[in-house]
Image (cartoon, rainbow, N blue to C red; front, side, top):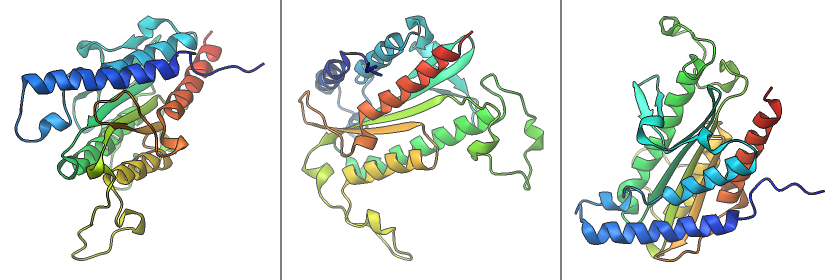
Length: 262
């Protein structure tokens, strides 16, 4: 017997989320113009459709829907380098942090915003894992006074205090257009860039980012979905960085938690 990790409606929910993104974003664009490129990467509830996918997967895997938190006051986690951070979705069962999601989008202004998105996603993960190592999410508390120069690297997953760390996921929904798909030159005034970045498009750079976020264990899963302007269609550049893979990995983690629950 084949057991499906994802709900039967997964593909439909994903398509609806992409459609809602464009519909909501176009409405926001008609009502406001920031004039500085920031409208390309923000927009309020543009990504709310993806929250419904989290709810559907959690329910499909056997957890109650009230374990999914989306209200602004309920998606706050303590950090290590900063006091708190607001995420998009938290999944918490009986005081155990099971899932943490951040959803981002980018339409246009690729050159201005790619590095900003990269710095944010890397920094947020670093902050979360160091806080997790120090018992911020229910693990064994560790004294912050013990952080000294000779201490082991705090991003090393081996020394995390909880052997069942939360599932940390990041999704980038990227406009598929000529500007995001064409080759981009790298500035190399002193040292050469890594070969894989040379002449890579912004879409390819995001794919590399997603792959390496997971490879270096900063994220449990990271996905890049491309969507042509104002359509409900979407696609991934590789199975490993697809939204289906991200939620399949998440579903496996949730099923394990359900099976382990007393």
